[in-house]
Length: 257
Ligand code: 13P
Image 1: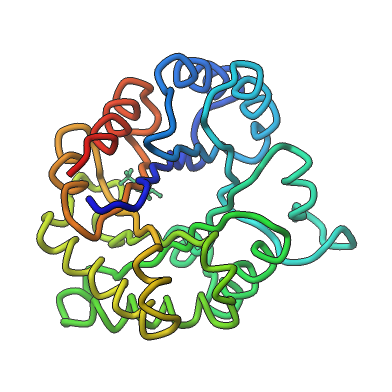
Image 2: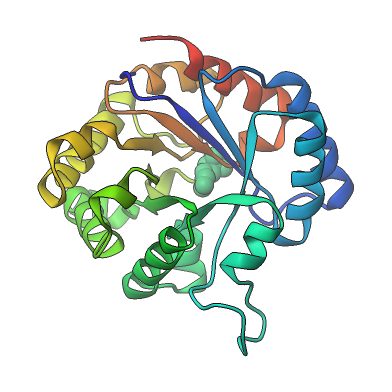
């Protein structure tokens, strides 16, 4: 871990109905305190409002994020939700480019870039998720894929806006599979991501950017991953659905290296 403030996100994906989402938020509000670690949860769209309300009422230091955004202001875009609507629901942070949106829904880099730019323009914090598939890793293309997705995703982002960007490195083959990148492999990928950011922006910006690891992070492996010098937090799927597990990961992130 570095001097960068760790950032742990809980991506609830398309899980939990309203009461379960509110109950989880309530449980987290009891367990999460202090400001050593930045914490955000990403509930499903219909439950942003009740989850944000509960966390606000409890004064919990947990931000509410959206799992996806749309680029356009209010208007004729059937089925979409605008950034200002999300902000109206208490959302301060958005997830863009998650592998499930890239590979299941079919989002490509140009749209992901538009989403990054629109979100930053609207004043949101942005987590840009990137990561290689297993066949790309086996073909030795991990860095090529990651730096390509970074370059596309961050095109047009200003130095000032980069202060509100976090990168989530999520190797696709590790998501929801129980397979985790080894701490050494993850560290190596994170280091290359940081070098690429230095190349695209400058070293100061690269030194300040948080790069989260995502992919089967859980209480049993979090400490070792988070101890790596370029791993600045985690984006957690399955383990974020259990308050005790998610809180244990936050505690692991709070331990200074
Ligand atoms: P898992 O922690 O379930 O592997 O999911 C990771 C992820 O996709 C977080 O965005």
